[in-house]
Image (cartoon, helix red, strand yellow):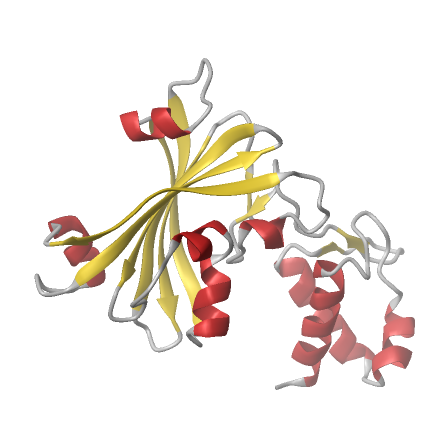
Length: 235
């Protein structure tokens, strides 16, 4: 691994674990040079990568400002994060509830997405997410059972990704995401506190393993007044 990526990963870990807290300044370039023992060019490359990924904002004449990755009103599209990882500040009380878990086979849309045949079967997992007392998220995920042979209620209500990575040893690398707004389905109305809203914000995603295999197809819906999706753009 290159030196600047080592520095990037270490600083990112410190931001994620709140060693460096949001809305505070990162140590200066000179201080980081002394801490890591690398050149100023290496430190600058690491800081640029942190900025591109939305962790810091570089301010001319000052130390970099730590943005961190929050949750409500701050969903970063450039990262694959679980709910607990997004809620690093512990500002929100979050509870995930399993609504349904069953196996499907022969669904043409799902077979086309995964590029599979009729012999393949898939887990369909639907979960609602209670945030500070309101059901603001509803998620439906499909997993290829050749890659994920077992899921139960305990796994679904804690962290599926933690199970996939730590227990099954799967290397999740990237996700293609598409954002849209549409009218809520009857299923979503049943499992979300939509109030006066009849539409939802939707993030439809396909998640890949390092070998290129599709691991998951997901539809994550949000009540539209509670979430803003954020990405970082550089000129």
